[in-house]
Length: 160
Image 1 (tube, rainbow, N blue to C red):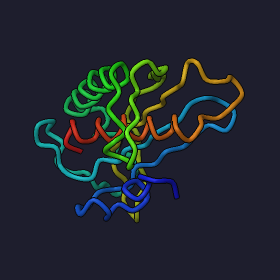
Image 2: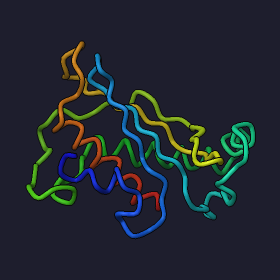
Image 3: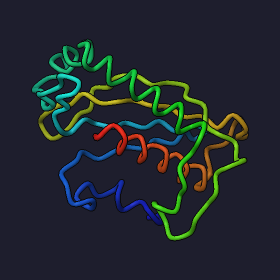
């Protein structure tokens, strides 16, 4: 496990209940997909019931105005974070200045149906691509760490 992965691999590591954020790196593209299940109610978005018994029940949440507002807010925050990435000093012991590094492009941001233990949750599905990455190569570990820092900041700012 790479430095900083404990937060992402073990949901209890940050001392609060949260569903695990999944990172799926493409093997033949410089991009990473991220699934962020919504764990707790978000009253500001009128999203109260996160655990649903079937995927069809989650569909009702995904088309609600509150969830669309959440996606809109996530898009605005993520756009800013991609343009102005956070420091990696919070996620590992050395500090990396991301200024001047190629930034990610947001290729997808939408709702997701996230399976769990006998329940389903609404969530966010995000795909970030490195526009300067080799076309047939996966993201390197440093770029993945950059993506984790960006997503971590997004989760904190949205209060997820």
